Each structure stands twice: as C-alpha cells, then as structure tokens.
Image 1: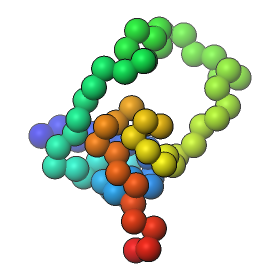
Image 2: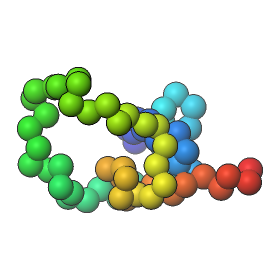
Image 3: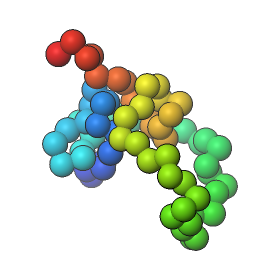
Image 4: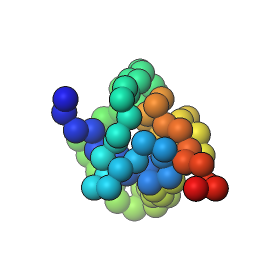
Length: 70
C-alpha cells in the first residue's frame, strides 16, 4: 500500500514523518476539485496551520482529532 503524507499533526492517525497511519482513507469530491493549482501566490494565503478541529477544515474525511488527554 502506498504511503499517504499528512501535515495535520493533531489527527489521531498522524504518524512520525508526516505519514497517515489510518487503515482506510475516505476520499471525497470537495470545493477544491476545480481549483487551478498551477499558479502559486505566496502572499495570498498566510493562514497556514498544522492543526484542525474537524474534517471540514482538511481535505480528508478520515480526519479525527487526537484525544488531548493522552
């Protein structure tokens, strides 16, 4: 099985080396499906973060926040 890279560090399935350790990954069409990613504008998006509170803040429906009490 190919390795899946992930930078959402607070996901239950995030593993060392920015890898996803989930047994399954759900892929869904989203609002970005028709976006043109051939051009990059660095100053346009300064809201980079490595944590999310829900799957809707990621491009991954498998996302599950880590239990913070661990």
